[in-house]
View (cartoon, rainbow, N blue to C red):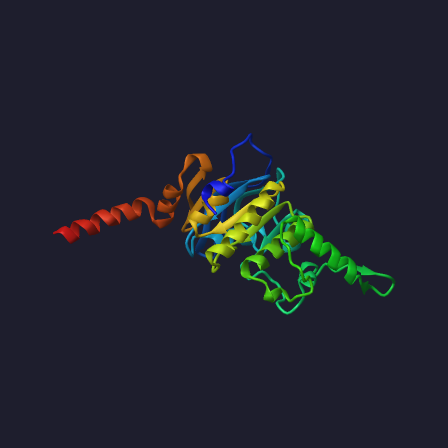
Length: 271
């Protein structure tokens, strides 16, 4: 897969689903986020990049309702919101697919698809296994995920397939915005490509996607907008047409700081 395979095309602005304006988060004297602003639009992928400690995890927790922010504003559909719990975030249409996926590896694919949201029938609440199997298979097929045996343990699937099951589950249960926490981390090239294709499918289905990653090449394959965090601050905020993949990679590698260090070290080597 090349960048031209999946690259989004710029169109007229689409509705803003989530907007952060000068959001800050502190843990005591530690400032995890300082004045972070970003927008998530319908049918677009907003890529948030940064190294460990940049503030990506804190940003995820705020959007997912795990932590509240201390300053600034978070607007959901234009409405000022503070989430008191993950359930409130989910009710607002925000689903988070974490890196560890929260899947039960020994359970069947269809059981994981409905985990915590099982369909029950009758006065005794008997599980409607047939309907759940049928729905899970159909919804996965809509995303282009073809699993011949829906009863196989989800742990037997590849890493990319497991990520895609989690994405399809979030879409089925009403997500309007999906936050993907490092979905291609620790995956090989082929499996990472599978996940990137399903990110594109989610985008093309009209969802807003927040793609958290430290890989600028993966981000550039699917992203419409790029935000780079460094030490809790936004160091870069660019639309796709405003930046090249090499420039994005350079910013992730250190940007001007790396160039200054390169000049300093090269001068010492030649002395």
